[in-house]
Amino acid sequence: MNARNLAAPLKRVNSPFPKTVNAPSEHWMRSSVRKGDPMRKGQRFTPKRLQKWIKQGRGTGSGEHYQPWHQVTRADPGSRGRSHIVNSGLSRLHHFLSDLELVQFTFATMLPGVVDLQEQFSLSLDDGFDAGCGGQALLFQPGAQTIARELGFAYPTLRKDDEVQPWIMTTDLLLTFAAGSADRRLAVSVKPKGGFGRRRQQELLAIERDYWLRRGVPWLLVTPAQYDIAVGRAICSGAAWVLGMPHVDQRLVEACATYVADRRRPTFGQLMTELPTAIDADMTLAQCAFWQAVWRGLLPIDLSFSTRPAAAVQLLDRAAYWDQNPIAARRSAWTA
Image 1: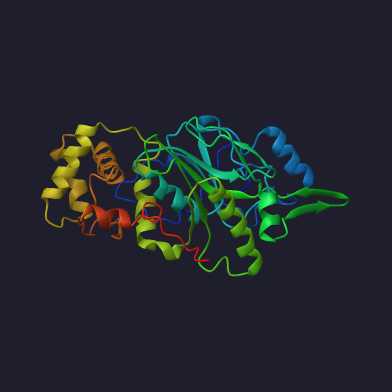
Image 2 (image 1 turned 180 degrees about the vertical axis):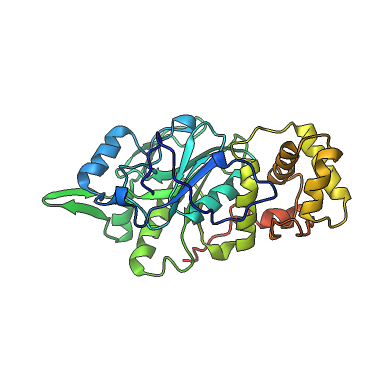
């Protein structure tokens, strides 16, 4: 997390992702680096801080009323990575603690049928009834502490002076899908490549995995090894034209997809020059239509291309297109 107050403007830093042609205003995302930030000095996790967050209702709610457990505010302790606040068009701001979390969130927004995306989702400490989602019957489920004990692992705690507080474990992303989907929920944990080699890290991931499997929720562990880094860069560039931008009329999006499909290996620059005339739209609307066609799967392009004017745009079959997305393909680094 980064030390930023949502009521105050964030200091912009250079984005880790390349800009697309004539990129729009970055009102959809603010990024900042926590390291060396003087405003963050002295902020630490303490039992009292965790208890305060519990009382505030962090990690609870759904949709626009959801409160992430970890947030990007001045009062929150910092993380080691670049943090981001994102306006995704889901009626609230999303909080991410690293570039990797942002990339996986962007992948997740592309999945059909997603109705809610909850980041920094806290796992229940104690046993209790879990309603699941979609009006399912209440089911008694074990809490994270019980699961740790059954697996033979020590549950993490936070200590200061004589006060002890069980740590609140979190899952990076919890996706909820519309009724009728094969899975109503999907949990995703995000780690850097090789970032879970230590025994203790594996134990904590095993607790998180078992927590979700006991609830009938598939769990993925995604690292940069599960996707092409170039694809991650491309979708984060394209996201500026999708997340937080106006929803383009379906007919215009389909017209854009048809025009691109009829061209033979055009360059990205050529398409951005031709599309406004081809679909009778201004430059901004044309680029929104292009990327929203990609997001909706109507324009299944090879996303490993560079979003530079000279880069060629190539179509893929739909299976190959969705295989570029590690969450859609259900790829996981967990092999135990």
